[in-house]
Image (tube, rainbow, N blue to C red; front, side):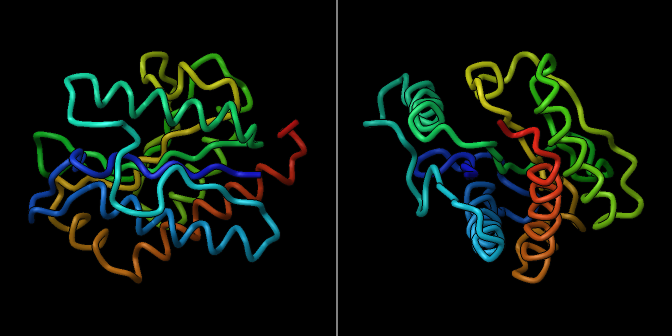
Length: 192
């Protein structure tokens, strides 16, 4: 069982790209493609969202916190073998590029999942020298007891990467690499 979290949504666009791309839209497209690929391999897939919504109950000042709490509640309810949160990155310097996977710094199983997906991203982007990176401050990573990673699929602040990330063909390739990493992780038997 895999839970795919498509980051942002609704009134929260996430990062806005160099050509006005919205992170929330790219995240959802990659998530939907990933879901299909995993299901073809017999994986039971849940999604935190399947359309352009956030998980809060309104526009109050705490809607972002409420949205994140609801995503964590879904993990507790579903009890997946792993959670994959899809995002896009941004940086003030346009030259910065490359997909990178984050995991909760003290979770060995999350680190293993992140490493397997990061290796797949390096197949997709042969010039990508980034390594999976531990983090102990991201809310979703801290508040989720199951193996979870955040896959930053590319930089919307990089013109070349942003152009690729809005195409169906490249989204399919990104989803395929994430799917390969998840399948390798599941194959290790470390999911229990």
